[in-house]
Length: 277
Image 1 (tube, rainbow, N blue to C red):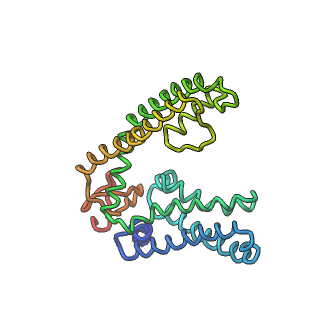
Image 2 (cartoon, rainbow, N blue to C red):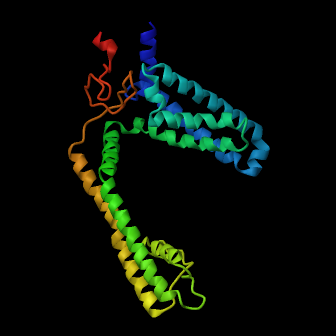
Image 3 (spheres, rainbow, N blue to C red):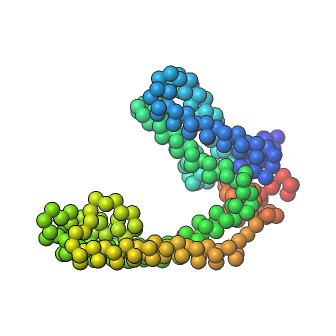
């Protein structure tokens, strides 16, 4: 009886392929958006002055509901630590604790805006299988590209150091020049190369302006490099894309299983123990 109760609770909370699971996620979505809206309204002095009590009570009600949900997630899986220390588990905890901390630390309740991060979990009701597969491919593409991107960033930093040093030599001796040091000149090179252009520093000599023009043009090409790296890797990942669903392991809470899978890809536990029995 307990097993059936926990299995049903697990199906509602962790999965979105059933009507009850979708309804739970919709309610959760509304509560998250309402909570974030309450915190934003509370930061408006005039509104908080008129409806401060209502905002505080509403936020406490939502926080208590999220607290029950957090413990329910822990109760209905066989290995609670897998959820507690998982990515979503940490987000759920961080989005619940700030309101309680506000009892001891003034202003910490504003951190409940972290609940917006929980929207990533609720997006599964929109996906369904296709969007999960795409997001997993994107994450794998970013992970697979990290070495190439790291090398590229190192190259950009070296380039900015060289260009900044050159600009310091060219512009540093000019009266009232903003290029007062190499670090300051490197800052300008980074801002210019990334095409941000704050305008707080600019060259005044013909040579300096010529170098700046080259850096600006160079910036357009450099910006496209990391995008190309990830896109190429993402295209490779798409070829191996799996059809996934929202089936969650009742043992370790792992998600992203293939359609028709009987066992968890992470811990090997049976995904539907009741059907097996």
